[in-house]
Structures are given as structure tokens and as C-alpha cells.
Image 1 (cartoon, rainbow, N blue to C red):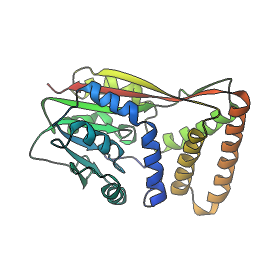
Image 2: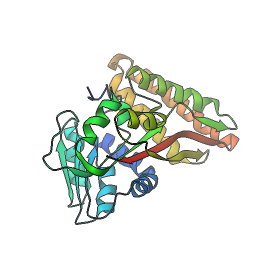
Image 3: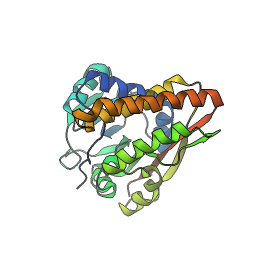
Image 4: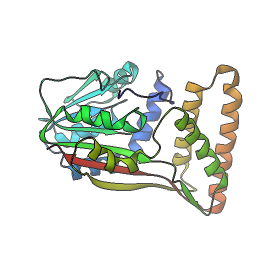
Length: 270
């Protein structure tokens, strides 16, 4: 099955959807670059998988232009309602569907997704199912993170403690922290040609307040969604304390931080 594992981040609130918009904008430039390198272009019809609040859909809609078309699917009706309001592109259609249930009589020129395969029980099965919706010669392109390789220089101990807490929560939910590194082999196992790869390092510095706010907001979202109410406030306070220490240590050391590598992979369906 290609259904999502437990998604550890919150759903259903406008503040959470706005957080996803801010996160998406941070990775917009590299996502656009990967899609264009993959060959996505004007007038194409594209399937966007796990579209969430529509940030990837918005990028693709701009790349394919007004004569192109984007069908964007997600399992969260609240996120889709938000996307319909906040993504102004007239050439995007948002639909509520799982990967398993999605069907369309006409094939697409491309299928894309960002940060979605990492949350699926079996990414290879998902790739096979999704590529069946793409015409021969069409493009399969995904952008996924390679987590678990975070670095800092000089070393910021509070940053690594903060990240390990997040990694433990993701592992417990069944997420694939190394999904970016798996893309090459998983494309081939799914019956696709060996993909081309593009990597972009998510690097920041100690004085990048937006970066630390993004990390803390993600952690808070996961805690509110998964920690029982009786322990929630104490866990939030603990994580917020580590987050504050992380930022102060990074600033004092003038540190450079590598959060993860974002890996884009693409190939054309035989």
C-alpha cells in the first residue's frame, strides 16, 4: 500500500497551513530549478501529488503557463480548501484523493511531488502507481530530503539535540529520513530509467532568525499533533527551551549549519 504513514505534523488549522506556506517558500527556488531541469515546460499537463497547501502546485502552474494544467491531490480537505483560496492560478484543480484511489482517463505529461514519498509506507509501490498515470516519454520527478546528516561548524550542541528529537519522532511514525538518498535506487526498482539527480544543501547561519523559527514551528506542530494533552505543555516548554538555546549558541559561535540535503530525481517513463 502507498497510503501515508502517520503524518506527525498538525492539520486543520490556518496557522498550520500558513506554516507550511512559509516552509514551502524557503525551498521554492531549488524546487523550480529541479522541475525545469527535469523538462517540465509550457503547456504541459502535470499531476502534483501530496500537494498540501498548494505551494508546489503554484510553482508548477507558473512553469507550465496558462495553457498548461495542474491536477493537485492530497488527503487533507482542510489543506485543499486553504490552497483553493490562497493559490490564485486558474490552471490548477485541487482534488481530495489518496494515491491508491486516484484515477484519470487521460495520461499526464509529468507527475511531481515534494517531501511526500518520505511519508509513504512503500515509496516504490507509490512510484509505480503514479508513473502509470504518465504517458510514455513523460516525466517522473520528485524532491525529497536526506535527513540525518545534519552538521554544524563550529558544532552547535543544542542544534544536534533538537534535531535528534525530531528524527526520533519521524522514525517512530515510519518516515524515511533518508528518502532523498533512496530516490536513485527506488526509481530503478519501480521500473523507471535511472534518474538524473540534483542536490541542494539547506544551509543557514547563526543569525538567520527565520531558519530557527521554521525549525521550532515544525517541532511545535508535531508535538501538538502527537503528544497526549496531559504532557503536551511540558514537552512544548522543553523543546522551546532547547530551541532558544540552539539559536543563542549558533549566534554566539557564528555557526554555519547544514540542516539536510534536498535531492531532486527525475527520469522519463519508457
